[in-house]
Length: 383
Image 1 (cartoon, rainbow, N blue to C red):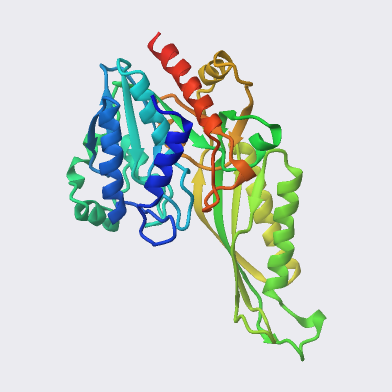
Image 2: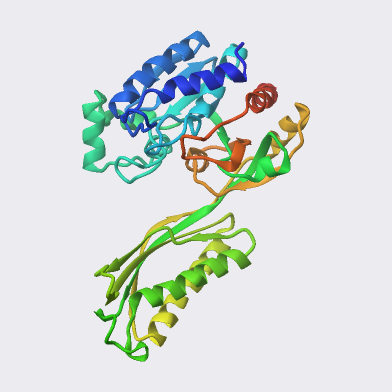
């Protein structure tokens, strides 16, 4: 058996396999991913798993006789990311396979979760549920990696997989604030993403009276305040304007056009949709009052995903740890697998609440706690 310290060492070793020197950047089927497959494949085989890379680039290892439990996470990273997001879950899964060699398991290291290279997330897990991304650039990347996209249908999960389990760092501050090592994920929040365009009239900043302006940025700023207010006053809702662009972007010119993004998330789809409607209606009212035009474009409507959490909570309790239920505000492969099989997640504390950053970390004792819970889960699965 290996412990939390060794798993941390392995994660940091894989972090050195990157597209950018001095940074952790590993995107879908990039050159470093081939070496990641080789090294993790060796660890899988040492744990008694029979390994292969499927047609979308997922690294998969199988042990025992089905029906099986699939355990995994992703091997790609965001640009300039950390060493543990995704990879930690794969390393925990490999160690659990090694500790329980006779159990029916499939360990998977998904090839793409972050959506960095092509702007499309969950390419690896989408293929497993029969909803592969078939865009021409993605297919070309698959071929360039030496894989055959005609074999993608072979990656789809069949009845031999009874469920999916994912271990993941929390990527937030809640568990640390509570002094807890682990969190049971009840649901993964649904996400709405929209782009809005406010159009006014550009004019001279020094000669246009304030009451005669059609300032697109002032209108967008008022709307951004509405986004923050709604997110702050609706329980469980998070709403974010992450990017704005103003034109012409000149110091002494009133902005004529502003583009803004909004990201709205909640564990209940009806709450998220109501909030989104309030924000879109609010944009219309603000624009009309200020004599602006506003247009919106929907980019993403990802439903919330309920997790199969009861058996995880029981395993946490059986392993001797406090049970804390929580919602994941970030998306994960588990939300995609939940379309096909019962899916579960267990969060590990993120020191400082830091993720998607080089300072991302995890505590060895929390990994040991997750391994103990994982063993309880496997025993209950087999039983």
